[in-house]
Length: 230
Ligand SMILES: C[S@@+](CC[C@H](N)C(=O)[O-])C[C@H]1O[C@@H](n2cnc3c(N)ncnc32)[C@H](O)[C@@H]1O
Image (cartoon, rainbow, N blue to C red):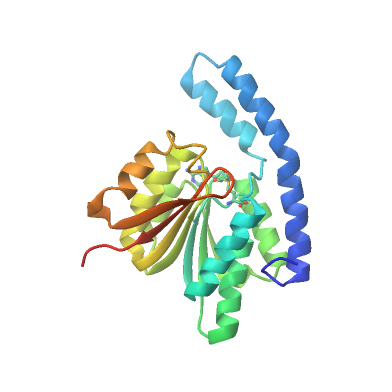
């Protein structure tokens, strides 16, 4: 049993993780093939990759998702933002944590997800309903550079699990809403260090008020705490 201690949800998550794992091999082959034979036009290459990824889960690894659940529980989080929802795997972990926080202490809670592929958004909403967690999730559908403009604080927790060029724009939009002490988790910061250069430039700028460390999960998992000077 996982930290969720919810056999029905864990069964559904196991099926989603298994589907994501099966797609990883295709993903690796695609990346190798595109590196060898890239399109001469950058925009054609980007469109091709977007289309290829449009039905891929690319779900957060189980241990990282369970770790996020634990972080939300230990901090008693009420409002979380998820950058990159896909079919909703990590969203389900976050929503389960908020549900369990409320069970323990009352009140209300919300995960705000972001997804621009409409078929993925529809599939994710179905998963939320099946899990009985829809009431804890608001999915912002569309490009996050637009949808996050109306985000309201305070935000206790942010998960960044998205294509690397979107990480910094997302953080810039969410940062003004982060409460003092909020946690920001970002995936694969070790394996994609150079692709995250602009994200790290933002995180490491003292004016933005973050304390950060890379945790030794597979590919690296960045744990940053928002601690701005008054
Ligand atoms: C790594 S996947 C997220 C996986 C998800 N967190 C999970 O555990 O299942 C990243 C997702 O971000 C979405 N995405 C990429 N760029 C986006 C953008 N500009 N706005 C909104 N969603 C975006 C992709 O369609 C993809 O589904």
